[in-house]
Image (cartoon, rainbow, N blue to C red):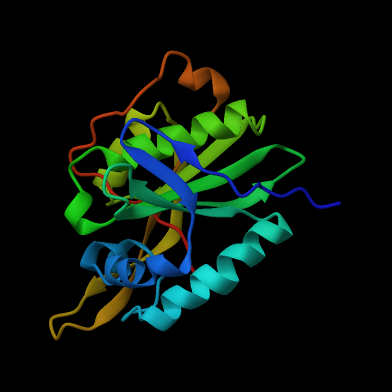
Length: 212
């Protein structure tokens, strides 16, 4: 039988991580049309509300049911406003490992939300789900994402040369693919010893991932 993640809610001092639902469609679509999200992910551009509804209604449930991963909405505890998304992918239940990615909406950057959400997810994976490894991959030029990885205690394991396709605007405003390197980071249970509470995150917002 394939192992799967449960439908869960994770609370921190300022955030609630929960399953995406249809009420998130407008905010999710707006967030995914941000220039930095477009640059560091493979989400379609423009990202429509239909794309958001398909992700929430079809893609996310299918990934969880098949045991491949988990998609969580990150919301502010006080306002319930959608701050971002945490995604687990490439989950290996035998090795007890998964790849973690995160995006924070433009209006919410600079508040430490990326680090807080990523740390809470990792603590839940290691504590409740008994995972042994969390992996992050950041594009070589995505320094903001690298800062988040460092702040939650990740260890840089090396570089995958030419393994990442990012995007950049051409002079006429069209998105074009740009090949770059991946930096691979890992987080093990012992790396989180003594790590509690929200962490300061001045400008990090996303690790690179394939959202298709």
